[in-house]
Image (cartoon, rainbow, N blue to C red; front, side):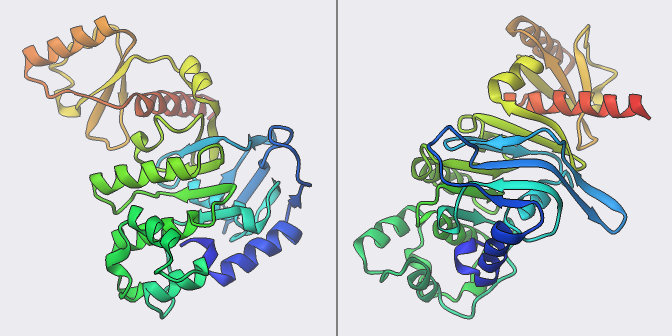
Length: 325
């Protein structure tokens, strides 16, 4: 749900930007002088459970950054987004160097169904007729022409996703927050819409939460990893790769553990609990292990590199947590 067509959501954000707990609007400054978004010591409790507990050190996002927000289900990604947009109360500080007019957001789930047709909603939000050449050209990129007569509440998951993404970027926001933007889309539509988003947000700022690591692998310049409400890592992609060096992560079935020849390779139980991840540090190590899998009849699959690095980071984080107990 883009904040542009949820009036209640806009009121919440405006209220929290000006008056909310820990919120502060910074004066407009030249790009690079001040973060567009700065998060410090944010904590959220639900009943007695601490579901978000970020460090006092700043998580700073600057104009032009694309930040990939990744983590397991329940890691706190959507909770953090809800804090930023003012949907939930929190302790700590979120400094926002932008106005409501500079901001767009697409939520993973949309429980707001205006009793209108897509055409009526689009014209109200964009303040243009659907026959306007600019609006028609923009709609075509999201393949929305065919759903204009439909009521919003009758849209499929993929249609709703394309509509909300379109509405979120049409006004060319300075900061765009995306929560699972390509969920419910088939592969071809994912690739097409990601390309459109990248072009539209070039030199602007994006915070994107996703489980599709290839959505951000060639886009994000910074990565924020959360696990059970805590920060595992925040920094540039280069810093992440330097901290967790990896050539490749090979996935094999866990029930093939006894047949595999791991040698000195690091082996990690993956979060699906049915597969193992085997970390290699060079092309030679990868070739040798893949050859041993072929000889042993072991199905082996090379994972995306960013996912592999994430697995290493999460494994180290969990080991440190166990050592503290």
